[in-house]
Length: 172
Image (cartoon, rainbow, N blue to C red; front, side, top):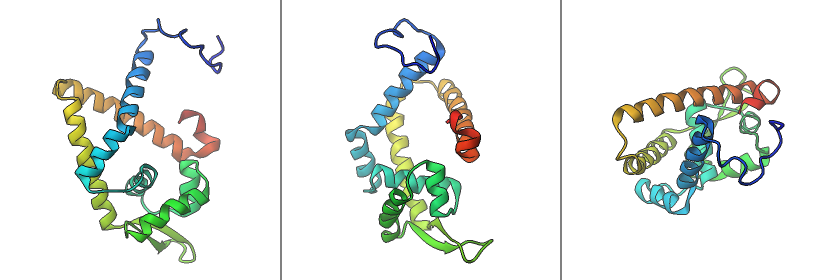
């Protein structure tokens, strides 16, 4: 079967390969983390009422540092108008700020503020608490190994984002 062709329903059920098992497990974890109940729990525990897309953008600034709006849109592969819309709430709530670029004072960049970093910290603590409940029966050694592997995958995926659409879009 062609690697790019879709897999018909039910055809991959017998696949017990590590990648197939990982895909099933990660899909379940993503569905759990994006469920309305869990998002409400994170909101309640963190006190952060940002939408998922606004929070994702705020976390991006926390990880990547100051960026131009056009670079953010390109990196996240979303339209500039979408980024601008999400930035309105973040700027209104003083979670990000517009600054002059250090290399070119004519260019404006968006940077996370101390208040924005505090929001990210509280959200991550809330998620960590929820994950602690989910993974309570998993041993420390297994959790450590899973974290190491997923961090390697994250590094690979982030490199693909940095490479951009021409240099690495197939890797992300």
